[in-house]
Every structure is written in C-alpha cells, then in structure tokens.
Image (cartoon, rainbow, N blue to C red; front, side, top):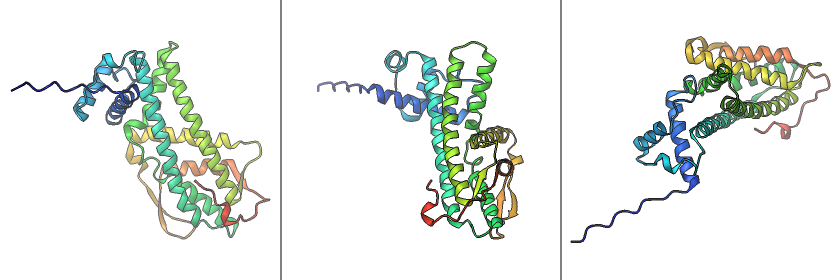
Length: 268
C-alpha cells in the first residue's frame, strides 16, 4: 500500500496573516490588559495564543519583513487596531442610546426642553462605563504613562500619535453630535466658549472615570432618581452627573430658537 501523500501546507496571503495575528494580539489585550506597556506582547506569545485558541500554526519567520518590519511595528498595529475598534463601538453605542431618546423628548416649554437635555445626557452616559471592558479602559492611560516615563523619542512618540488620532476622531464625532442635539432642543454654547472645549472636557472626564471604575467599580453604582420628563425612576451615575454639570456650564437657552419639524430630528 502506498504511503499517503503529505498534505500541502496552506500558504496564506500577507493580508490573511496580518488579520489572524492582529486578532490574536487583540485577544490577549482583551483578556489581560496592557499592564505598563506593550513589551509583553511578543510574537511568540501571540503566535502561541493563536495556536492554542484556533489551532493555527504560524511561524515568526513568515511575519518578519513580509508583514511587519519588526516586533515593535506589530505592537503598534495591535494597539491602534484595538483602540480603533473600541472607538467604533463607543460611537455605535452612544448612537443607539440616543436614537430612542430623541423620539420622546418634550419641546413644549423651556422647562421641558431643559428636562429633555438632562435626559439626553443621562441616556448617552448610562451604559458608557459598563460597556467598556476594564482591561481596555486602562490602555490609553497605560500607554501615555509609559510614553511620558520613557523619555526617549521614537516608539513612545508613535504610540502617542496613535492615541492622538483616535482622540481627534472621537472629539469630531462628539462635536457633531452635541451641535445637532443642542440645535434641536434650543440650546447654544455660551459666548466666549467653544463646543470643542466642552467635548474635550467630557472626554477627559470619561477617560478618568473609566480608569477609576477599573479599580473601584462600586463608586459608580447607579443612583435612582425620578426623571423630570415623566416622573419615572431612572438610573444616574457619577459620570452622568459630571457630564450634566459640564454641559450646564457651557450652554444656555437660544433666544432665537423655534420648534423644528420632525424631519429635523438628528440622525445618528
């Protein structure tokens, strides 16, 4: 009986290799967090994880110079991809939270418009902390701390650039969201202030709240209060209270506002 022919080894494309190994790296960060940097995210660790979880064996030699120049370039790509994924999830989550809220707000009086503004804030912040995995919530903070402590230019500067791009994109999203919401319910940014400043302040509070929640989650247990719009009991947390205070400091009623038509409800 003739011996069976050896099975041909699958040759994956550069793109397939890249996505497989990036996914494995993201899996490690999601389960273990970043610690004090990315030095532990080695090719060996990631490839071992890929073989253990997916049964796929890839050698380091098939990656170097074909997919990534070196391990440091790979580490940056993993971090950038996971921050990009989290940004997309945040944008989608906030949009989903607000879509239903816009349909039930009340524009009939200044009091109800202010109550509607509070409800938009509550809805947009309600799930923000709970939907963010604790290990991921410390990624940007850990990277910044690592970069600032390093002192040497180069890799750390590139990590900061990654964070800068992600933050800029999120800021742009929130600026557009806040502009649409304020215009719809008849508020405007106070003279001498800019909506970009409000967005950055809220994002900074969010980043700090995520970090604090990762070490002391009980602080952010919800507080039940009656909703001004309809008297129904709803949950608020410390992050929501903070965002409400920031928004109230930055905005005022627009004296030139008139009730918009239904077709002008912001699309998210």
